[in-house]
Length: 209
View (tube, one colour):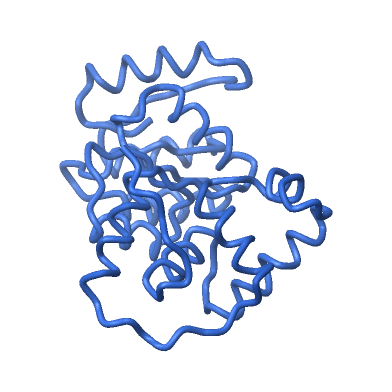
């Protein structure tokens, strides 16, 4: 848990440590300390505040993956703005959630990214949609109706299994669809799929609270 506000960080460390399925939680207060912790502990998930004294969430992502490439990174921010969300996704962060969603949302995010899923809070999805409306619509690649249903599921934060159950497909089929969608949109991650699809008007994202 990377946060330079020690009181906040200590509180979140204690709360997360009580959650079933989370074995151990440690704190860090800067990008440099996050790098040292990652080298020492090789954590499964790094949860980081967006703005730190010596950098931001992008710097944390680069720093921890330099020493522990398998790290999953979840950004926990006070607010979502298009610049921060876009920068986080471009840097390869696995999720972006806002503090207003509460502890349950954070715990869900930690669990999801630890399983290789992508997480985007409603507030973060909303700013991407608003950002799209301020841009000229680019030529959109053609996605099939089924692929658009898959993208809609990704935008709602569903796992492959949840999408499969909703659409009466196998998990393997959904995984193949996601891979094809990534290739068509030029995306590297599920979050980038959502970001690109929103910007190009392929999907409408819920406004969220």
